[in-house]
Length: 420
Image (cartoon, rainbow, N blue to C red):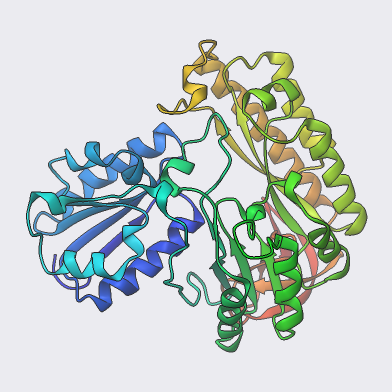
């Protein structure tokens, strides 16, 4: 392998965003003949897949430098450095620093250069390197926050991302203005714990303040979308934006994790079941077309069939549509890993399958009422776009990628809608 470095991204949308920033940094540093793996640590399976990917890339690129970064590398750098396939390990802070890429592109100085991972908990600012969108020409993602101050018992991510840090509102607004000038019709705000945005900024603004400021100062932004939020932290201005701002898309992904109060307490979540239901009811009352996605974990330690039934029922009680189901995976270093009453692996799989089936049924219910309705659809490709609620729509005739097309839904094809 020669020429420009090759990047592989595992895990979340924030990792994908940061990979694009790393591409810019590596190019500016003149790096060549390198493979960079941006790892995920959300589950033990994610870490296993990272190691598998590293070995595969080494086989396919025997002469390239293999550099490993991301959350798994941040949390356990020594184990990745011990892999014979790996030339260097860099942390989540270091990967966003220009000097890191300059050092890497100039060759390794010695054994001490192989691991460049500092204490993520000491980081107090978000990375200054911003990118002007990535992915399709239709939708741009803007990182406004990183890290998390909470310590859910199942989650290792704060140890990979550090404590919560916010990008100042002025910086966010300036970046979105550039994206709109470049022709993006939709911007998505992303972060690790998005609703904690602003807690570390002067005056402690809230996420709703940021949303209202963006929409007020950038009147030519057609669509603003929010990624995953913690509903218990939704502030008054965010609810006001939901009620009054048609440019804020009626689709929220909620970090719910479970539907039983006892399990939520053992997870060290900050909400109870009724809090989640109340939020969904209030948001839908303010915006009747609102749809919800949610993260739900199946098989958390001590989960009984009765506990699990409350998660299943939450799909109906919150009227959830898009489910992300996670079979519980024990992560060394988390409090939940020390809970002795583990759920049998086959039971976890079976419960996850039942949750996914409930999710499939919820999607079917959502699709069933769409034919005949008119939607404003953002085209991700000439043939496929998404409604305001993030539902995929297929077109028979090609459309302009990146355009917002007004169309009437004509039918359903699998898990997608169709339009003429």
